[in-house]
Amino acid sequence: MLFITCFSVCSVTNKKPAQASITKVKQFEGSTSFVRRTQWMLEQLRQVNGIDPNRDSPEFDLLFENAFDQWVANTASEKCTFFQVLHHTCQRYLTDKKPEFINCQSKIMGG
Image 1 (cartoon, one colour):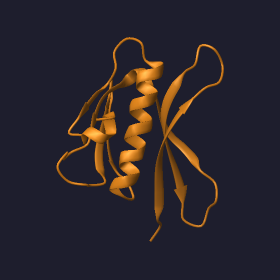
Image 2 (cartoon, rainbow, N blue to C red):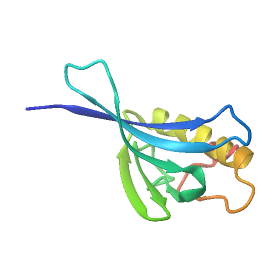
Image 3 (cartoon, helix red, strand yellow):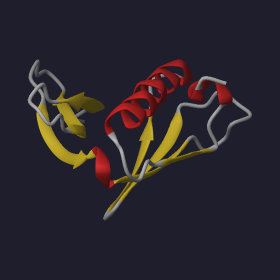
């Protein structure tokens, strides 16, 4: 049985104008390297769904312009940290349409 670990990375270029993206990378069992699988520009992100704001669950969904991706973080705390970074990055780098954060705990949005 082959085990694959996926990671979601939010990154911003250091060139002007800055470009932010979300990248899915995979690491195969026994390997120390990562392979980029999919990349979306932050402008393509339409919705971040925390699934259930009333319990600490690691599941979440990301809805992009032309794609839908389901995720499970290692822990609910890790999901919260990713959401906080993602929300901050959207607020800082997106001037027009910002994604909708739904079913998220208020602490994620600074509440």
